[in-house]
Image 1 (cartoon, rainbow, N blue to C red):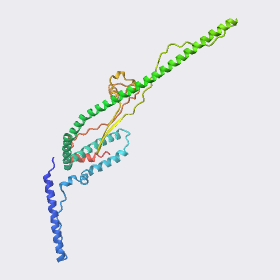
Image 2 (image 1 turned 180 degrees about the vertical axis):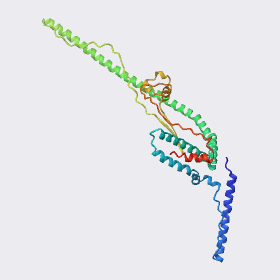
Image 3 (image 1 turned 30 degrees about the horizontal axis):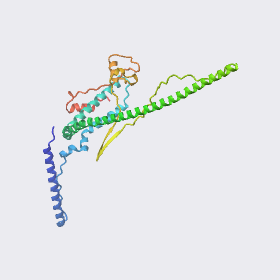
Image 4 (image 1 turned 90 degrees about the vertical axis):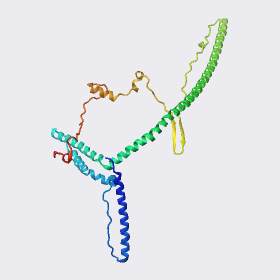
Length: 328
């Protein structure tokens, strides 16, 4: 039922007329006081109920007093109830049904409030307008701009990556060249030391032979194998993620780099990165599976209440729901 704005206009006009009438009466009263000192006091008509009352939350709450009272009563009884046998179990289930019925009734009262209907229709209309004419166009423009900004950021990031990669390659090549140079120096020194030791051995052997004595062994360094450069790369320094910010009066736009992972082949993903699916586990249990390693399978009981209002119409039915059947 749509709200009658004509009725609202009439009420406003009537209130304005009453205010004018009150002002005239008060003015006449003041004149009478000046002459007779005992004026006759006349009260202006007061409009007790107006369409504005539909939006008065305190007056609206009075429509739900009976439901609040019943809810409070059931809360006390439910707190004291102990389900220990079939009788108390039946009582508890009857309470669940009655509570659902009360919720249904109270919901109907709420939905039929004139102010609520008008407010809901107005809200829905504004929401639709805002979604179609404001939110969607803005989101469309943003969705058009964001890929451009992201692509530029990725291009800049790739350029930075290549620069870092080149710098790292040059650093590694420099380290490798220095290492090779030092290895060549060390090899040359070792060769000279070996040749000197061999020459000394030959000299001492000749002297020992000439003197007719036993030769003396000189320690000769082993011949070094050809130099094979094995270079271990040191990891480049991890660069912190960059955050770019654009600011204007009243707002900022921040571009923050973030590493992400996209699944290409699930079969190749290591086990430690696989998350169990609760949905698949529940479906397996419903299908009859009773043993799954790493899980506990059990039967859970939960009451499900359905309320039908088809046969519960009229004040007598409402009274029946609100009063219960006297069992609790």
